[in-house]
Length: 320
Image (tube, rainbow, N blue to C red; front, side, top):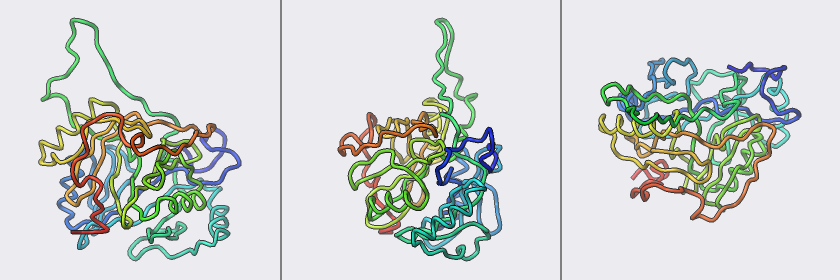
């Protein structure tokens, strides 16, 4: 794990101020028991924490998601990680942007920097180890010589267990306003966009093609969380393991254009999705990505099944 400071040997873009990782997010859901079952079946570790649940990649102590019970599904706050030496400069930068600092939300213990985006989403900036990868993760597409069986027996294939949270796609009533705000405030940079329909943002210290994205809707909300696995076979096996547990609703297998990752989305009990993803494009810290504005037909998926009905419905803006 990378150290928190930008000392020799640490991945950091020199002379640039910005967050290095999407560290965690919170979600309020109507049933913690449903959440435990869904994320457990997805291959993540679900742990009881106070009155809620924490969600982890197997064998790792980094909490990616905190779940609390509430009347309906609702996105809580977003936490982004900073290098230690950037904490005070970032505070001064935020204040210079005219962004009002706030207290942490009720019930959240934190010594981070808090404020809200233009549509009310609470944001925490905190000193944390870099959880965004420092290089493009390995992608496994193994073949075998003739005369050898490649696929394991189904009974021995094992549980698909995502390695990390890769990104979030959030709904927003104004995609351009989010691009401007998250760029100015957090130092995120545009990777690609399709007009005011969707935009994808990456971190400046080396990150996937996007660590957060915004899609047009009537209001804010969570569309999906994306979780990195090792290859196409794991995506397919993940879809099968979820279907076997009663979570057959979804979309995939397919491949995106912007970001290039292979995907399968699984519908959760509340109208949003968790995505198995592999082989997303990676933007090194010493490269400026050639961001472009793409036509809608080139902005979504290269191949895959047609979109299921209601896939882009924002249930947080319209619970009905």
